[in-house]
Length: 295
Image (cartoon, rainbow, N blue to C red; front, top):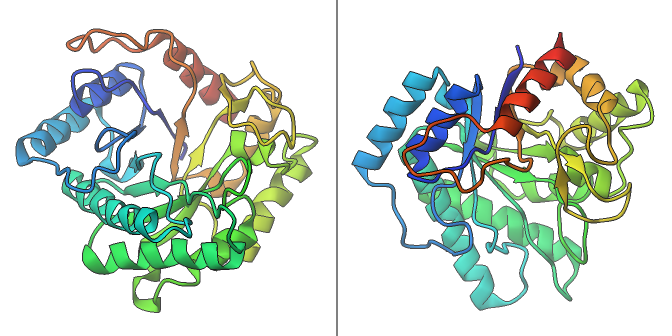
């Protein structure tokens, strides 16, 4: 009932990311559909690339409905600057187009920063950008808002902000949108899920009650920063300030069943050769730990 995976290294192509995930015994996966440092508003997924990815996923034994794409980091759909917002809006639509071409569950994105503008208007801009993408790419994959660590004027720190974004999506497209929770971001933004099993349940309850639905994925990351530090610095589970037990508590909650549970933690071999499908040692160790926590 738990689908554990990671954002594996894609050197050699995303089909190699799938192969490395399979070698680590994963049942979920996260990839980039294009270079994450760019808007990629013209980048597409060629049929041969999608076919290689499909073959690799089948060989790895990973269902595509347990795979998500992570959008480019530069897309600031909360921006009050018209030119930046328009590029982000178009980039979000292209992310949905590429994600649909890959045939996976959907993609997640960071809403971005409100800058000097009103957060209410910023949340509306994020939701409108999502609605634009969903309208432009009909009958497609899903779009997921990822909660943020809360640095500066970044949006998506609270369930109220996420709910305001999702409220802008027309009713007919609402089922194609949702959100996911990153545990490092939760901790860094001051959500205490680490003090007790009850605290972990209450955090999930709060998001589900305010937004109206449970998360569609989790990013399972420990945190280098302290609770409320607003620092987005991921660590291997058990090697940060969160510790191991809070992950055990989260995995006992039925809302973590049946959804992608993705590690975004440091790799031991980030410079792996293009043709090397060997599992990363850190991923193998983390998979074993997560399975023991879920037992």
